[in-house]
Length: 317
Image (tube, rainbow, N blue to C red; front, side, top):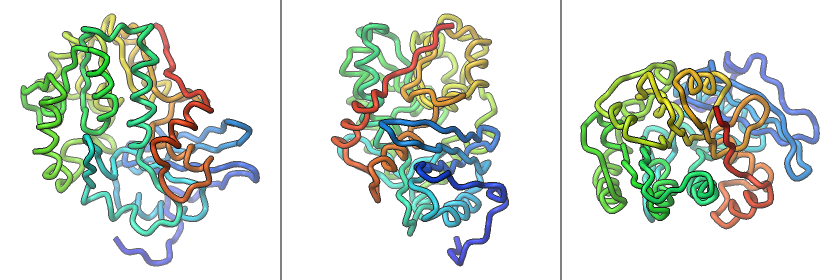
């Protein structure tokens, strides 16, 4: 990807910087541009502009947008993909994604920090509402939210980890954290060298429904947890009485859940304006608030989450 002086990308022709006094957070996503949003909020006396810009799966355009906005905003989120995956005490970097964010002056985060803090805490906070002990829980993909996977296991939930079932379309459900850690050690070194779009929907594919071998497990589950696109992509037509635990939710997603009979929709990130932004956006917000030049450590995330009182948002249908 050439890094010459950046021209204005077509998708940024009408882009406007944040007004004075605001921190500006921009998420560049490989997801659909139909989910773009720009909202403002105020937390702990600081005003923010939060913006999400999709590139419909085009990594070259994403790189161009990052280069053009570098130094013009306070923090980047990277959506529709991960820079790396943390499993246990090891971190695996996606070879295809790393060059896309290389050399930027503005800090860039992919949500991994909040997946290991905010999402883990959300499981404990939801205990009065969802009694996790023995609860049939389908976590559609675990390796990109290991904190939630561990928290569900520790809470005593009966978890089906769907990484092989949904990621590889093989009827091999994982039923324990021990097995999940074993699978992660084997597949992640290989997985992170493959094209990201082989196992995660980007662009218009995020809007498509696919009935795979794992669709049958939605009937078994009381709670369906994980990435919004994964949850929707493999879901059956009826989700009557189910609880969905996810993060990025738009009004269209709420309507989708309502139409399928979902009983309860829970997001781990707070609602801002018309939507709940993804963990990468909210992590970038925390980095921008702190004025940091890189991702924060786990203790710093915990402290800011507590101060900003981030809690799961529950919608009962």
